[in-house]
Length: 192
Image 1 (cartoon, rainbow, N blue to C red):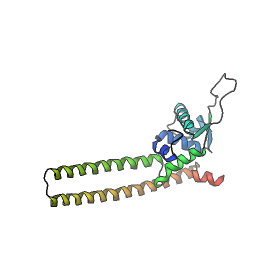
Image 2: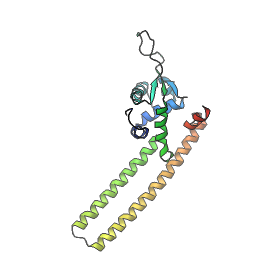
Image 3: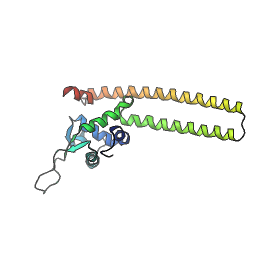
Image 4: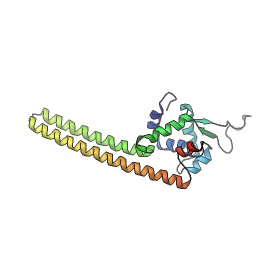
């Protein structure tokens, strides 16, 4: 994560907890103290959130609003630091959610499955190539290539169905967030 990276590059590389930390900050009106963030998202702890935000500050996604007492006696405010999401941070969250309308964890699941499918296709292609190198006839090779193409088509159809299912899950999650009162990115934009 670097300030020279494009938003989509940062979004691609965010861990699930980094994504949750950034999204929680956005959902808490764009500015919150660490305890508010950890209270809003299950599974996040203050030390982890602060570490993530320090990395995000370096990438320009978040800014620290206060620096503690000013006299140097207590570098950490008793109630925790206050952080604010930047416009660049909002762009990263948007980039994370643009692909098929999925949240980052959902997109990662699809990407992992797709990567496995591509690996299987590559393995099948290697088997076909080895057999053709071993002297398989052209007719046999054409039949195998045809079978391989059918399998690829089937895999692509299944991927499309998976993406559709994940889109439905994303819509359900957004509806649930609205019902709970967390709202979404576009709700905040309309209120500005």
